[in-house]
Amino acid sequence: MKKGEWHYYGYLDRITSLMTLSYLRDFCLSKPGTSEDTPFDANTLCFRVGGKIFAITDLEVFDYINLKCDPERSAELREKFEGITPGYHMNKKWWNSVSVLGNVPDQLILDLVDHSYELIFASLPKKLQTEIRP
Image (cartoon, rainbow, N blue to C red; front, side, top):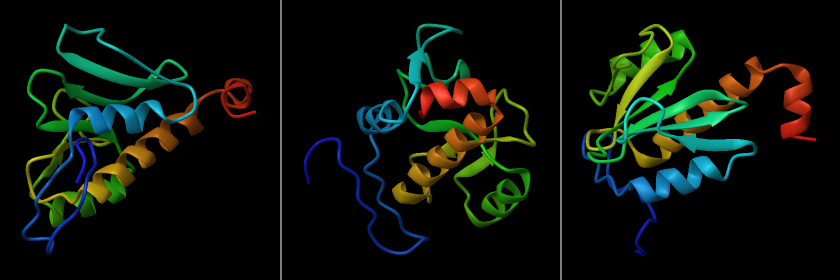
């Protein structure tokens, strides 16, 4: 495998995560209208669409990603995966902290990034949505 690529091996109880900060960053920034910044401190990296945050992680210690999630889906995911917990320093109803070191498959992490992006995008004014995705 090349550096920055991800792959899922094995069963849900035995995951070898190859998710890297570089890969996550490229994945997030590939989404239309996405920007990144560090508004809270030099290590807390935020990804935004239309000025609203859809993903947060730590630049120094890349071990989790905070992602917005539908509350019903959040409850199911938290029951199924030890590595998905209520969002650290976030509204725990809507946000999850997703471990990149635990039992969460990389493909699920990417799906949850997509889900978070789409939730935030859908909350933007229609005019801004059209500017981002003409």
